[in-house]
Length: 261
Image (tube, rainbow, N blue to C red; front, top):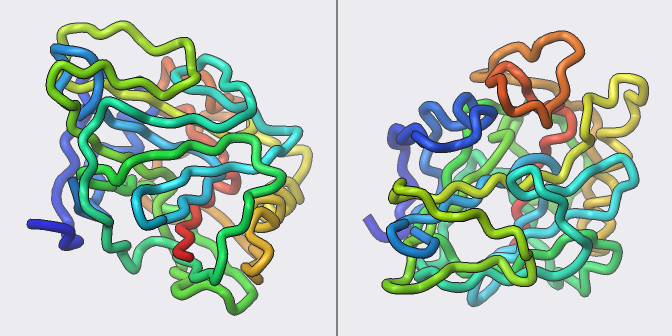
């Protein structure tokens, strides 16, 4: 299959946090390329939720999010300190071919990412999958190669674990203990702790801050809403309450951009 982009049914994660049970019940394979964790795990899945930019480099992908006061930053509900993180202990896949369903921006230089809060240096995964839950948005600007009307609300990076390796996202100190499952799931969030209904400008201001990390990108979000494939969130629910799959992240805060220098 190589790096060929295709659609296939996403296998539901048996041990995943319940919030992502609805994000990936039948997701699409957006990019195909190369499983993570200490034995007996054979696969690692990193779920990115919230506001992110993914910079595709020569040797891997940099996942980055901006420093935004209203946002919280967690991995499996444990706080992530500001800084640079690096994933190790997994096999490197091939450079992915990005799908037309992704919001893709071509840039001459990704810059130094000044103003970022989290920067995660990741090997190319075996595959990248987008959730069937879609965001619908309108943009103005001319820097992006594609500006789809709707695109996934979240992305999952799949890795094979190196034999006898103990994968780590250094310097994160709260790596979960392995159970009996052959798949380890890490949910990485950069989003408000509760729906920011009192500040309708927040999604647009936050997106602008993310784009400021890339000075050569001229892109402004003019409109965003939930598109399809998502359950309706319960009234007053907060996205951090992962005990209920109906607790949905504010779709307005879940715009994810792919950047290709």
